[in-house]
Amino acid sequence: MLELAAEAMQNRRDTLAYRFPSELNKPMSDVWTLLGGVAKATGRYLDARQYYEAAIQNADTIEHARLEAALCDVLQLQRHLGSARKRCEAALRLQPVGDPDRPATQRVLGLIYYFAGDPRRAKGVHSSAQAGLEALQRWSEADWLREYVLDDQVAILADSNATADEYTPLAAEMQELIDKLISAKEPIWWRVSDARLRLADMYRKQQRFEAA
Image 1 (cartoon, rainbow, N blue to C red):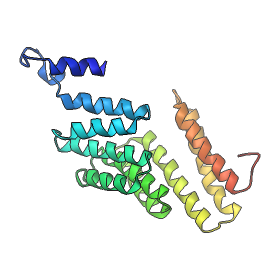
Image 2: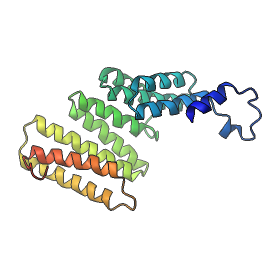
Image 3: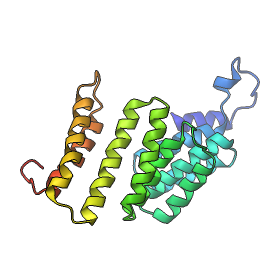
Image 4: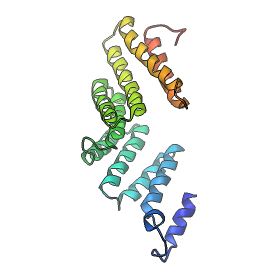
């Protein structure tokens, strides 16, 4: 459908024929952005990066920041951590504190630090993202970021050869987050699955292998 949209837009002659141009007379960059999302979702990361790069050429400041963040996410999925970090930092320079898009960018930047073996910095960035989401009253997303913070704390404990008991409060809080996800009117099951995997990792580090 997006390819049909792109073809129609390329062949369009009269851009003034639309009654509601703000809704129907979209720029081509919108299509490139959406195609980038499709390519990313299907694991075609190089294609996704090309679409995002094409879209970024004519983007305004807000969209430019979102596209930098999208490129950051694709690059971290490919584990090009240095290049990904630069893209996230570029996005954050365009997203001041309080910007509704900033926490999503910080989430990815925290992942980059996590995979680079720096869980303390990852925790700091993820905690900032959680606080930003709470300020925006986006409670479900804030709980999701709390899962990331707990994951970072587990990595910090692992680096310090922590005892099994030190993981107990983290595991208890993760279970509370899982219970909250399951009790929702419409549970988001991939979130439940991710949280359970995080809890299983905590149990494994406590050598509670059957529970894990």
